Length: 426
Image (cartoon, rainbow, N blue to C red):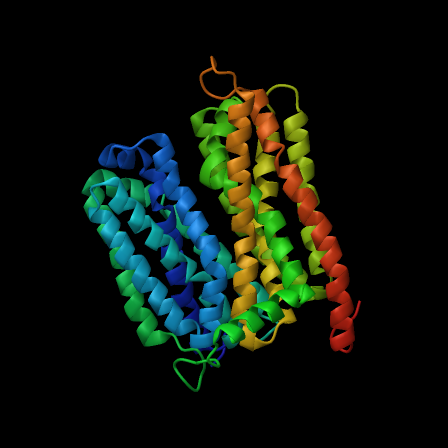
């Protein structure tokens, strides 16, 4: 039997995979509403507290290529099961951690487990759905998974205040255990076998797989697409958005929270639209990304050049346009998928998926350094002009990304026309 998306079995497998990714995002984001409690519980400073976020992002980025290789070798089902087990165990460990070292090591393994989910779900999508549905299912995967960040806010706040630290985090670990069982029972790599294995790769094979994936201009194009469009919303949402809106733009705390919430819903809203665009006009996927990149950079230019604090309506436009970057970055996965054979699809996806997180780490660090540089020692907090300088660091990354996208889309188009002239046309 089929649905509007695909066979019922394919949809069931996808639903379980998305649920695993949803819980991974929830567990990744659960510390965002527990910062003050964590500082008190572990008796740590603000800089030590921020290390939790930096460590998780760093581990996530560094794990993407190894995870891609593992998916190509052992199949997405086995890797997804392993990631869910690691993530649930780490979250349970964090529930009972009572010192900083223990807590930090637990969050390290949360990052490891989290890194093993998204690539697996994308591989399952490409295996179980017809090619014309893959862009839509990929965007829906990202959109529904990000709801985990929203769920980590209100329900997690309630759980922490009602149940306390250990019980609240134990409950989130329990969700992972439930999904571990569901994955064992429901998820299959293909209709014929439960788990698919790729060829065994030694060091020479791994190097060859990485070289062949990275050598293809389509993989590099996908990498720079993800790099260029992902970081602005990520850095606003995870770290610098609230301080920028409150101290840099003079918004109230409530208004700042509303702006960040609007950005999350913008990310969700644009996903299906971009899926339709790239399905209808796959040749122009890089054009869509360049238009989004230019829109984000232009809106930031207006906000940063505005005398005094920007109007609230302009800041709403800013977060909506930045929200476009989330689904735009996922177009890079579609480019990587159509540029590589199935045997190295996981490797290519891992290479692309690390790009935006590397850019986010670079930007988050640059913003902190520039804020310290432009803030006088005798000033408490950060002045608005310091934020203007700091947020302008984004233009360096946008410039680099746009140049590379333009470079590799020319090379990628030429190769696609040479290898599959009947499939790709203007």
